Length: 395
Image 1 (cartoon, rainbow, N blue to C red):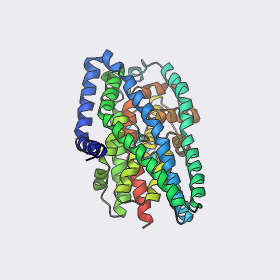
Image 2: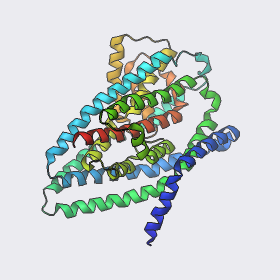
Image 3: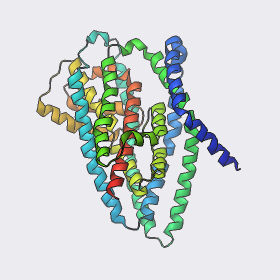
Image 4: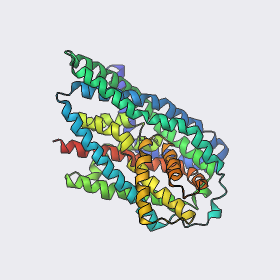
C-alpha cells in the first residue's frame, strides 16, 4: 500500500472521533482559561497562526474550482442560470436571517441589563481592532474579484481545442491543495482548545454573565433558523435536514474548531460533490455564497444591533428597522466567514446607523470568539443547504 493511501486511512480514523476530540478540547480549554488564565492568554497565537496558514489555501481552491467548471461546461448559459438563481436565493434567505435575528432580540430583550456591569470593558479596544482589521476586511472582498477572474479564464479555456486536458491539470492541482488542507485540519481540536482557553482566560467567565442572554439567545436563534427556515426549505424538497447535516458533520466541526466558515469552504466543496450534488452548482453557489450568503453573520448583526439599541435605550420606528435590514444586507456581504470580519461588519453597520454609541461595541468584542463559532457553523450550514436546494432545482 502506498504511503499516501496509508495517510488517508489515518485521516479517516481520526475523523471518526472528531466530535469527541472537539468536545474534549472545548472542556479542557474552558478549564485551562479558568484555572491557568495567564497561560491561557498566551495561547492566542496558536489560533491566529493556524488561520494565517489556512487562509492562503482558500483562494487557490476557489480559483481552480471555478476555472475548471467554466472550462468544462458544454453550455455556458447553464452557469449564468445557476448564478442568477443563487443571487436571488441569497437575497431572500439573507433578508429572512436578518429579520429573524432582529425579531428574536426584540422578543428576548438581551440588552435590558444594567449597563454598569459591562462598562468596565475599555472602548478603545474596539477602535484598535477596527483599524488593525480594516485592511484585511477590505481585502476579503477581493474574493469576488478572484471569482470574476476565474470565470474569465475558464471561459477562455472552454474555447480551446484541448480544453479537457487543460481542465484536468486544474483539477489535479486542486486535489493536491485539498490533500494538504485535510492534513492541516487534523489540528482542529488543538485550535479549539487554544481559542476557548484564550477567550476564557482573557475575559473571564464573569464577563459572560451580564450578556449571557445575548450569547445564549444567539445560539438558540441560529439553531431555530436552521431548523425552521432552512429545514422547511428542505422539507419542501423531501430532504431530511438532520440526515443532510449528518453528511457534513465533520465540516461543521472544522468550522467550530477554527471559528471560520471560509476556511472549510474547500473541504465543503469536496464533500458536497462526493454526496452527489451537481459539480457546477456546488462550486458556483458555495464560492459566491462565501461572500453573499452568510446566514449566521446576518442573524448576528440583526441581534447585535437590537442588543445595543436596547442597552442604550435607543428606539427605532418600523421604517427605521426596515432601513437597518437594508444596511445589514449590504454590510454583511463583505464579512466572508473569516474570524473577526463578522465583528468588523458590525462596526460598519453601527457606524452607518448613526444612532447607537460605538462604545457599546466593546461589549460585543469581549464575546466575539463565542459569537464567531456560532456564525461559522450557521454560515457553513447555509452554504451547504443553498447548494443542495439549487442543485435540486437543476434536476
